[in-house]
Each structure stands twice: as structure tokens, then as C-alpha cells.
Length: 110
Image (tube, rainbow, N blue to C red; front, top):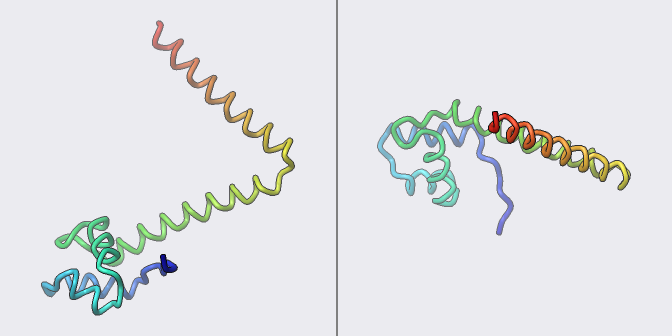
């Protein structure tokens, strides 16, 4: 599989322009030199043919990207910790989850 190149705002504006002018996804993907499924999924997850908006689509993509970056930061910090610190962190997370479950179970008994 080839490397995925994020769609730019300019490409999203071309999609919006194409949709407003009645172009098919196939026509748009040829103009953008993108795979059909890339264009199709982009349109589908951002309002469809009628409601697609390039600025909104870019804002949503930026949000998703930031979530991925934040997750990578957290994972990177964990990787720098010693094995003992990672284990203690995981145990703490598990204990917190167990306590939440116990609270839920105790609340449902009342």
C-alpha cells in the first residue's frame, strides 16, 4: 500500500466546487489525481454530495489529526518510562477502572 498523503484544503475546495457543478466522484478523483475511494470517503464522511463544505471538512480533519498526535505524544512518554513505572501506571489505570465498576454495581443495588 502506498503512503497516504493528507488531503489539502485546496483539494477539498476542488471537491466542493466539483460537487456544486454536478461533477461525479469519478470526475473529481481524476482532476485531483486521487483514488476514487479516497474522494468517495471524503465526501461521505463530510456531509455527502449536497452538504459537503471544504472548510468544515478541513476543520474535522485537523481535529482528527490532533487526536492522533496527542495519542502519539502519550505513547511516546510511556515508552520513555522505565518498565517498573509503566507497570505501576497500568496497574493504577486498572485499579481505577475496577473502582468505577464497583461504584456502578453498588449504585445499582440501592
